[in-house]
Image (tube, rainbow, N blue to C red; front, side, top):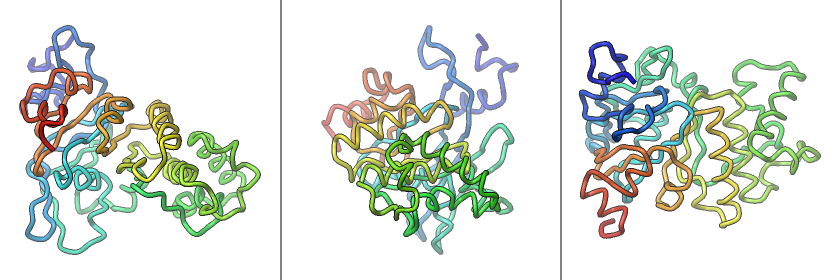
Length: 286
């Protein structure tokens, strides 16, 4: 096993170690963490004059689920939306720091990087299902058409593949021309997931994707998230501690715009290093 503090260790590992985050050796005898898919470094964010994020440094491991937890207003959703430049849609917002996407070392926040292309590589599923006022087929095909895909066979193949990956194909394969809003709430959310998958993103962002769903639909989405990490890296914001424990491999606890603690989910929930984390997990705070 490579010692992360060794000068021969990969630069990404050494950089995280300098910031007190040990992605490969979280506890004695632990298996090395998987490679990084992305890394926020020194990330701060302002809504106008208000600083919502303060010098966040956090790894995102490839083909794993990372949960962002913390009380309301702590910066979870703000951090999530930095990864696909969603804040660019509103004036007066500004970033400081970097979010590097591997393996090509693209800084997602760089001014010469097209936010539209970022959103193709880093897709997002929102709190409430938001299907477009189009057919089920065209909802899924939308991003492909934006990318210039027009050949029907290619669209048909990708729409079917994405709906299957979202565990929705069997329920809608004979209804592809129906309006997406005719589906149930849980089906609509899976349609949004299929739409996000269609452009082959490298990272998927989930912003409390089950908060508007009933328990049965919630269980379905959680199972889907667990299955999807085989093909994509996932960041999920949730207020539900049980959900974070069930679906995530890594957990980040945030408070007042700062990253208080990051680690493997079992460690965060059963043996946190920081008292603030323990107080939140156990319900004594927040």
